[in-house]
Length: 107
Image (tube, rainbow, N blue to C red; front, side, top):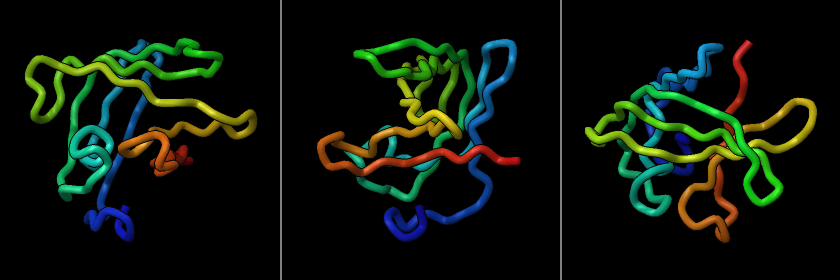
């Protein structure tokens, strides 16, 4: 994030809860805006999550009730890949660019 996007590194979290809700804190803006370009801003919000299969791949559907800059909410997906450990990722901009952001599980 720092090298590719020039972001300030602080606390950045994505928390999935057992009740089907999630919270996202300080996610870099390049995953939603600017077609993969960094504006050095962050999003925070919460909503409901679910897992589904899309074109033979598993995705985590995020349905935001609230999100910084999106008062009406927003829907987006994160991809799941691998077997052990499972990796969650999202493409940054055009998926053909191969640029992606991978999420790591904290211990």
